[in-house]
Length: 482
Image 1 (cartoon, one colour):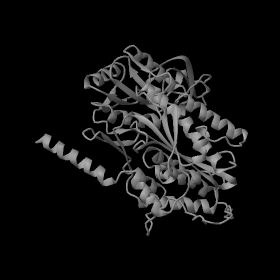
Image 2 (cartoon, rainbow, N blue to C red):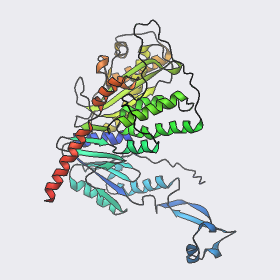
Image 3 (spheres, rainbow, N blue to C red):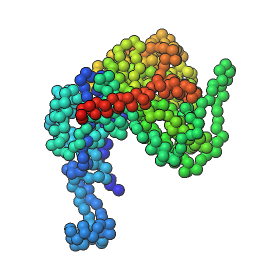
């Protein structure tokens, strides 16, 4: 095992930044998207601190031993090798390669943001790009600027360029520049994963990813449910954890309807029971029953908008849940919905003493995320007014806007003072609307199958729309080839 004394963390683009860049492309007149891939990025990077490798002669092919006369250089049946340049397997290889790339790009006017890791801009060219290891996702206005970046990188590395920009970090991108839209999908990902888990489609269609417990309206007391289900064996435990890990990426990338059930199952995966296993299989039934998920971004004013909601005491151990829906929209009093750049389904760590406190905690969680998103947008050149944050709890809105002064705990006091301060700084604008218009409600609780079917149409694009875009592109290519 190699023990490197320094930092080996490499600044890289996350899913949130990538999605904001896609919105920026369709929202900027004349902008387009392309990708560049560097080959052998980790190799041959100069190292100030050499590493050493001990190789057994028995692991080396005889022709290599003969070619380099290794028998004479061996000691006790082993060869000792000094590593002077980067190679795969070194923990510092990624960081060293990234630092060398940054040094080379800086010479030509390209600089990485000091506030947003993975976001790069040029000193004067209308070009921005994200970097994930050795994959560039490039937004440009004017092809000559993209060609300049391509030529700079080509001086130092072998590169592959895709001007169509139709795939990045495993996500398929269908661009409709005329309508100023981009459709995100991961074709075949769900089917491949279901095959990996040997899970067949259910005989009866499943439209609910998690069991729904209908509330008893009008009851004076709502009793918590305590599971008496027996624990599962280690094999089933591993299966549950693998399912959560596999589909979490799909949920974060495209299909946000998976986030709530995965969050619920993941909260039990450390000590899963037979009931947890049944919930996991229901989730797989749901995935197998649905068409390919498609997430669409439409051109906007690039103004961040947030919906926040909380569900009080609906989790085990008297915990509450917070949900958030983040999207980029127009600068209106009531922002129009768009494809989500981020959805949050989060169990609040502390026990809340009231529904209002739970709502304030949810607003606090969403506002903290929004602060960083505002920084990203500002770094990309999209100036932000006070971010509109919608809640469906009139008391929480009244507390933040100084209409109400409640008796409170210290934790509650900290949260609402923080929110009040941020509003005074004009970072946020908090407003109330009825619960039916709050998109974040979906990520705070489990719903009936009917509601899931309705909401899926609200947040995801029907697959037929994507097929029509692809068919239109195919017809255009056929006309051009005639």
